[in-house]
Amino acid sequence: MSALQNKIDFVALVSVTMANANGDPLNGNRPRTDYNGFGEISDMCIKRKIRNRMQDMGHRIFVQSNDRCDDGFQSLIERASTVMKNVRDRDEYALAACETWLDVRTFGQLFAFKDAKGVSCGVRGPVSIHQAVSLSPVEIESMQITRSVNGEKKEKSGDRASDTMGMKHFVRFGLYEIKGSINVQLAEKTGFSYEDAMVIKECLRTLFVNDASSARPDGSMEVVKLFWWEHSYKDGQYSSAKVHRSVKAALKPGVEIPSRMEDYIISAEPLEGLEPEILEGD
Image 1 (cartoon, helix red, strand yellow):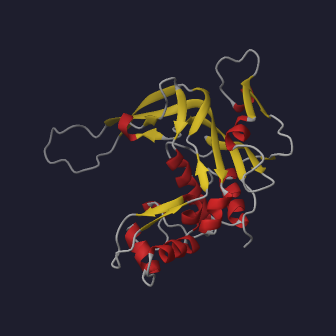
Image 2: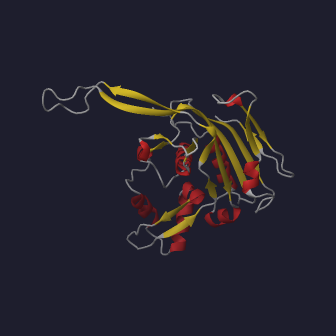
Image 3: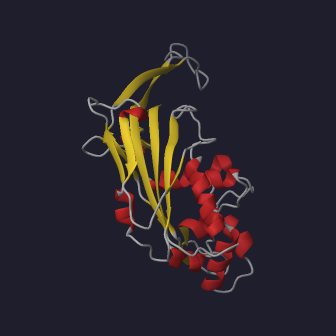
């Protein structure tokens, strides 16, 4: 494993078509939007998908979702206790966690629970990800759905019919922008390597592989472009904000409401001495 030498920035453009990119449980699971109608995907949602892709690639993950648990542990404290049973202090605890789990040395982790030894610590990860925001306001549609079978046995005759009502919400179309960076100084502390950075790049490129659901059918969400900048030294030639702003997306002349990726003109503003690698999504 080779140490990460230089700062990395990235921008991924994600298209959403007839899908619920990230439902808000406090708003009837409607797709998240801001007050101006721009669609949003939380950073935690994006990190969850990256963790899932890490698992698909065979890496050990600390924060696993219940439906993807691959080691039989039912809680984080169980998973931590089996690995950390021989550690003696916080530094050793953090080091062991980073060596064991890729997502810990990537995103960091707060081990706020106390195990039998009373050891707790926090790890600050080198990979930071912004919440994704759509480039244009999105149109959200709602569809009433019915279920034609009873989930429970009827206790009395005359109870409500088997058909029950529900709602399904989706974004008709949206092009979202995911921004992120990898900090070398923090990578040195967690042991995050250049090979780990390549794993993150592949996770982003294939973010929605094995992610299909009724809210996100296969093909409804897609990484269309991934811009990846590797700077020449630790702190980078430019700030992350300037690098992220260099990606430009404008609607084509005559298009008022975008309905597909092709309605945008995507470009990367040149930055002297820093050329992005541009990849197509999968």
